[in-house]
Each structure stands twice: as structure tokens, then as C-alpha cells.
Length: 488
Image (cartoon, rainbow, N blue to C red; front, side, top):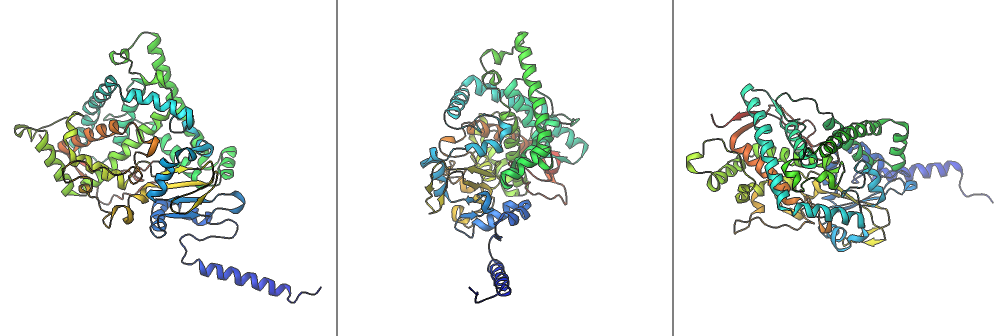
């Protein structure tokens, strides 16, 4: 049989089809290539992933399907739709566990509560909930935080103020929260927060590990597993970081066990406040340092770049806590005192809305499902929530969604306004809602009140503030500031 057209016509038709596809996609959200889908375009723009999520999701009704290479089954659904999130996190919770792929990506965390599902997760949560509900434990946490602020943070800030040097306050907060997390888990203070700013291998290792873990979310599984096998790229850094983390954790555990064998038990430990003997895991070490320090860093930057907010916080402190005779003197705040500071609490909520410490969440369905937005999802299909983009959606937070506005969190009765967790996801939602939320707030509010009442902060001229690409939202270049004491 003779074809009515030749090879040249077939080639010409293919070229025309390709050109037409390119023309149609010139204004597409993310360019889709034949066979490999949107992966090349996504990788090319990964350094600006947060801006990309905002751009795409704000123009597509809050949900967008990222098409991956067809032969790898890598389609990924990105969403900030509160109805979809409520469905996934609450209404149909059992169909959306963390899953095996999530556990592979975050293998660094082992079988802790962050990684686990079903009965193991329930067991971890029950144990931690018992600790969080223990009054001795809460008093221990408050006392520990106060001592670390008094003997660690204050001397460092006084030193920086007296010498006039520029300091990376993000690094200071990371040292503070690493020390308090170690004390919380093991009872041992490693003393990373000190005026000599000694080298902290654990901190560098965590930064590299978190960036590598984020990379695993973007790359095809076969690619990052090949990198791991070859020992190249970010997987090489992750392996080295894990060795460092293991050494540090192993040393802390060994030290604690030695103290227990030798009968060196603190008064607090004798009351049963010892997390290490209940749940040995590196998870609190890893994420305790970063989520809290990230929250403090973004909060401080937002406050010092919004003088009106800074003024209102100080006025609230003076009106509710400090006697008139002591207004112009040094004050170290107790956690109970900060419960009176509604505007300060609102400012932290607003900072967490705009700069959530964990900017992405990842789920995968066990069974096929249809989301409220109408999108179909299939087993093992990756579903990503962009909390960073969610906080900037006008459809969720109004036309002023990009503004730092603590007032949006305060009701007419001057109380904190409740926002649904599927709208404000910084502390998770549904059955996985963070049970340490109250403890976290008491810690950051006590630190926030103390530093804003006692010190002035000024950003170094020309310093660029930008989020890093990682599973934890910290500042890419740190936060360089000068510090001055407010009182003599």
C-alpha cells in the first residue's frame, strides 16, 4: 500500500506540532515538555520555589497538578485550598498517612512521631502527650528556658552591644534553641550559646541535611537513590551530615546513661522528667533547634522592620507587666507573665502565617479519592501543601494578605482570634495537630518579650533577607544586626 504522504511530510508535521505546543505553552504556568513533563522547568526554578508556588497557586484557584515524567509516575498535586487540606488532614485522615515514600525521604528521623503512622504514631503521641500534660515537666521546661536566657542569651547580647559588632541573630537563636533542646532531651547543656561563638558541627550538619531532604522532594526517587549509591551531590553531604548528627546524639546518650549508672541524677530527673529514657530519638534534637529558631528569627525581622508593631508590643509590656517605677530597667520575663501579652501573641501568629517554620507538607493517599476541589488523587500520588504560599493567598486572608498585621488575630473582645487549623497550618491540623503548641508559644513569647524590652536591634545596611530552599524556612544569609542595650 502506498501512503498518501512521505517521510518529509511526517517530519514537517511533527515539527509543526512541536512548535504549536511551544507556542501554546509560552504563557503556561509551568512549561510541560514531552515525556519529561514539567520536571525540567521545576528544577530550573527550584531556587525560587516559594515565589513559584505563590504565582501558580494564586492563578489556578489554589490547586495545581504538576505533571512529572510519564515513565516515572511522578505527578504531584500542589494545593493551598483549605477545603482540600481539611479533607486530607481531618475528614479522610486515615486515607492520607505519611506513607513509605515520606519515611524514605525523611529516613534521618527514623521511626519517631514525625515519620510514623497508625499504631506506632499513636504510641508516640500518647507518650508525648503524657509528658506535655505533666505539671512537673512544664515547670522544668519554664525553669530551663529562663536559666538559658539569663545565663546564655543575655550575656551574648550584652557582649555584642558593648563591642558594637554585627551579629547573625539567626545563629544566636539556633545556638539558644539547640542548647535548650539538648537540656530538654538529655539534661545536658552543651554550651553552644556563649560569647566565644564556638564551632557547632551539629548546626552545619542539620543545615546540609535539611537542604538534601528538600532536594529529595523534587528529584525523581531513582535519581536521588542513584546519587546516594554513588556518593555524589547532596546525597554525599547528607551522608556526611548524618554521621556528624549520629556522633553528637550518640555522645549525648552515652553521657546521660553514664550519669544514670553513676547515680548522678538531678532533682528534676528524680521526678521523672527525663525524655531520653522514655523515647530515644534524634527527632527532637533535629527539629527542636530549627522550628523555634526560625520562628524567632522571622518574628524579630518583621518587628524591627515595622516600628509601629515594635512600639505596640513595648506599650503592651509596660501596661500589663512592668510597674511604672521599673519601666526603664532590665527585666527577664517569666513564661506565665507573657500570657497577658495578647498583641505579642498575635505578632507571633502573624509571623508564623507569613513565614511558617516548615514551609511544605507532603501526603500520599492509600486509596483513590476525589478532593473537594474536584481533583482526583491516586495511591502514592504526592500531594504537597505550600504553607508559605497559603499565608499569602488573598482568597484565604483577604486583600492585605501580604501585610504583617498582628491586628488580624485580635477579636473585638481583645482576645486572640481562633483561625481554623486548615487555614493556619503552622501547627499542623486534624489528629496530627502539634501537641506542643502551647509549650512552643510560651518559649518564644518569653524570649520575644525579653529581647524587645531590653534591647534595640538595627539591621546591617545592605543585608539581604531571603528564605532558603530547605524543609525548614530559615534565612539564606542569616539576619545580620547591631544590638544596643535600652537601659544602662
